[in-house]
Image (cartoon, rainbow, N blue to C red; front, side, top):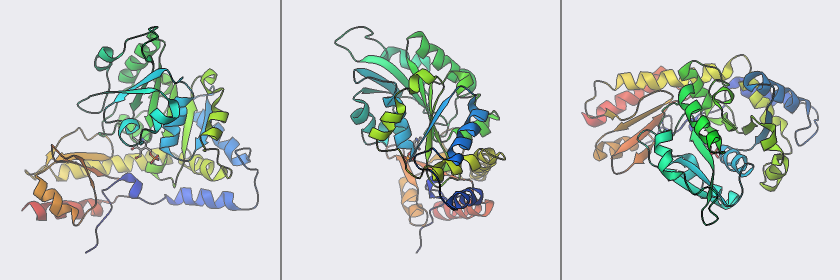
Length: 343
Ligand SMILES: Cc1ncc(COP(=O)(O)O)c(C=O)c1O
């Protein structure tokens, strides 16, 4: 029997045709390497249209590199970084943040993947004490690993708090587009305008083949990034193949269309599951993820047909993801499979 991969991750989807076309376009002829090419220059301008003129943008190969190298640029090894317990930074980067930055990663438990000032306060202390790691970065994920979304005010509260302590706010925006589409705001509203200092902006989960961008909203913070990126092994020679993808994603509202569609499909899945009493939706469905708990025996059965992650073994909580190319038919087939298993 074949196992369907649709709901396992938004990384399981392919590449949007407009992005593939953009890759093909820059494939013609020759081009200067290491980011000095016309396409990369145009793409940097495109980022400025979306995020504001006064930014620095650097392309890297993946989201883990964007997070780690972006944070490396704004820390010293005696600093500490604060993130939600569920953050990709903490769970899925193989201690890379600790190894490359040398910093202490302090994790904060949350109910829904979202940090708040009140949750953070008890953890942030020791300023100027030479025996203590020096608090420097709060890192949040937008949308979160639980598929929840920070509104602009919630982000502003966190950035105001960080700045009041002379700390900085980093955002893991692997699914930033999904969050912006969910809130119906532009990309700047939940980044620059809300006081984010450094952003990892991902496109892979929203129709790109690969590639991430590190965006600095204060140019003083990016001074050493060229060198950090090279030392960190993410100065890609044929950079135009990353930048061309971002140029397409940020043109003609493609970022929004893809994200909106993925979000709508998750909402559709959630609605279709309302009359299945064995499945309990555990988190707000705000973007392209549906979190649910169901008895373990049903999970095991369902996984024979569909690949997906069990997020929390103890609570039997699973994650089902939709992406830009999820169809209503895909969702209905999945719902049918769930209903068959639980009946
Ligand atoms: C929240 C989050 N951040 C970052 C990443 C980037 O990871 P990768 O290095 O696999 O591109 C992911 C991918 O799963 C993610 O879910």
